[in-house]
Image (tube, rainbow, N blue to C red; front, side):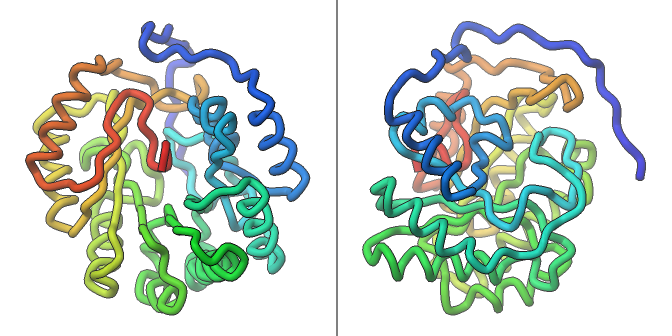
Length: 286
């Protein structure tokens, strides 16, 4: 497999991107509970800069379907490698954790599982069912892969346990997607989002963009138009932060006032729900 190498040099963060280390008791309680129930979170695996803030509010985005991803995206620090068998007890443990945290809205995501016939959609459905059985009033948001190798089968698997919000991130503009998203593609994301909306028009769809990888404003605007045409009504836009020096470098730190401009543009384009600022991530403050 071909690999992409990047210069191993860290760029200092601007002042608006610096956050305090967590010290809240709720942070450590959340950490302990997730460890006790052997649940992975995108907060840890993707080195999310919002982990301290979210865990202090007893919020976390759980990763299902094992520790390793079948893709090697150049912006993502989630582990890659041999996949594990799907854990039949995972839905129960997820529901228990969410109940004990006292959540009424939960975001569930996963690694890519291109090795599974349905891309892992069946496990998303089982997790959604388990959550609703244990916590009847909960709202469930999933952040799914693109299912590009199994889209029809994956959509079928979700039919009886649809989420309240279905998210899939486009991540970056088409030109940069070829470098950033190994095995993934701009067109596969749009096909996934269109497929969800065509099959389940009543389910709101959501997508997210990272800025700072070297995209132009024209490319961002074109991508937003494509998402709108695919039926996406919820959008997140945040600053890309390099997880390690082995990942794609940051080309630019976008100032907060520019994110405010993008928020106004997205509102004018008809995106009903928006989270647009430097620290925005797809599940931030969901």
